[in-house]
Image (cartoon, rainbow, N blue to C red; front, side):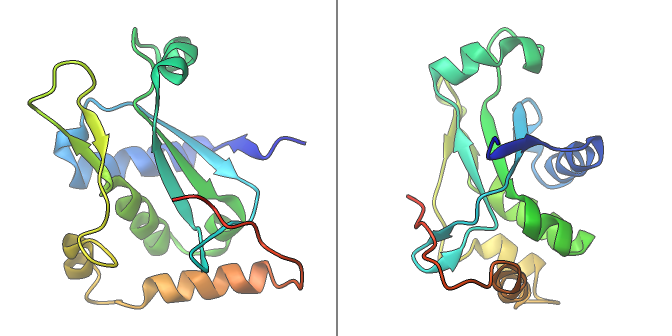
Length: 159
């Protein structure tokens, strides 16, 4: 069984909506969105989602699917079990948080899409946007813990 699954059109549309609404600088960025069916932790925290910048090989292999001569710029991985267990507001928060890692470098002519780390534990803009529910991530992590309640070790993901 493959660890990764394609997402539904609904998930793709939601990601596109978040990208268009909050990230105009990424309007031309091509994202491939996948479900990850493997439970993961990083630094002791559940990984709800992660984003990866594609390399030359991935861009080449995804040209046809992306309907582009250069393929996808990023791959967004969503924890499938958590995604299905949280509500739409938290789904938007998860996607928005991951897209904050994306950076469009206008001074680069080759591959302008980069990744950046957090300003603090989160992104300052996300803290402001989530001031109505600042503990949303803890709630989602609790969902992950309840879904993955087990005695076995959980692989720690590389950052």
